[in-house]
Image (cartoon, rainbow, N blue to C red; front, side, top):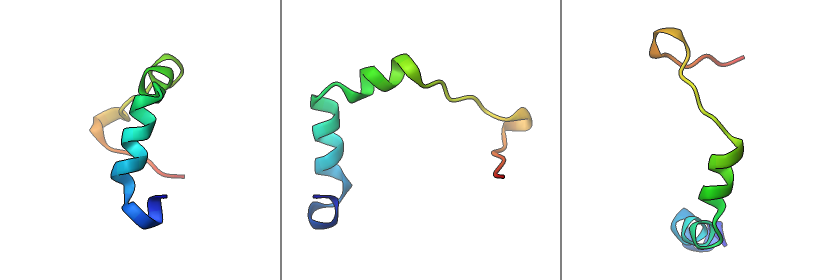
Length: 40
């Protein structure tokens, strides 16, 4: 689905399914000190 129509249809489907609400309940994003991202 993503390779055919791009990410937009997949994101719309996820939003309709309530994935944004579910992720908001279980995932917290925090910024690293100084506002930069660190990769390991």
